[in-house]
Length: 375
Image (tube, rainbow, N blue to C red; front, side):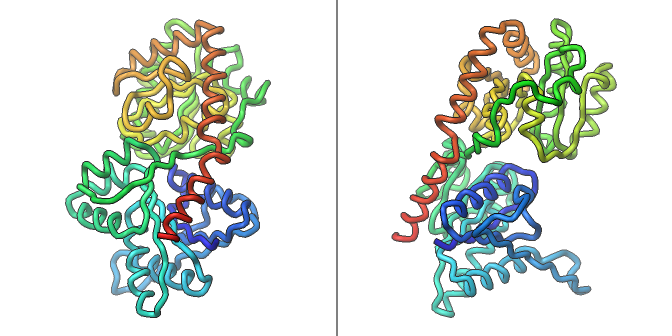
């Protein structure tokens, strides 16, 4: 099968999932063609059967803003036609599904046809798509796709409710490579972050307001009153300055490590004890799954798709949104009870392996591709 994949090539979850899916499909013999404005950051080295097509941006004085959606459409048409693709799998509704639809309509005039599958990841539905100016476009692009998938039941229901869509949406959860993300004994970074044997909390995200990163500082403040602890923050974004300010204000700046964007996430996760995810909006929680695969219990908010991933009182704890005090109490409970912690740690790893391993999820995508191609 020849598959085109378009995604945002950045550190966000949608780009990570799309890239890992492409790599997994290529390893099974499919030809995978990535179409984007930059090389996906998870494509760290040459992968057989994987090809990259860069969307070239025109700098023409007449256009005050770049015409990415139209440039993407042109590149999609080119790759679909000359590489004889069977289907286009686009991740994130805006503008990828819209560009794919436009490419399909233009190619029909050349007697060429292409199936389009759109995967919804979260903020394309819960945030960006609800802008009044975008809502009709998102609804149209989803309804005109040949197939639509969502990464959680929560996101499926949200899409059907918000957009009044008359369309079947397949739920295919995000997945993990449990060989890359796994528990490692005696992590070399542990002493760097906890030189005196402190417990280590960790959070990774893009530091957008919906991630509520400052809440991790509030959690640390409460935890430290009972247990010596450190906090690792991985990522960057709009809320980083506010988070740094709060750490200084509370006198915790020496206990918090701001690492910025990092690639070797599994190594850093293995230096920690508990993963914190106090988000205001989370359609699935890929970073939490990565932590679980490394054997970390997760303490999170109860929003979005997180309850589909984290089993309360089994693999971690779920608290009400914005309740930093409750999250801190759950964290302390785990850190003070070694036997319970070890059980939660094993449960987290087992759930990542038995439910969300790529060997279980990627075949679901392959089956869905066949279903759409034969429809």
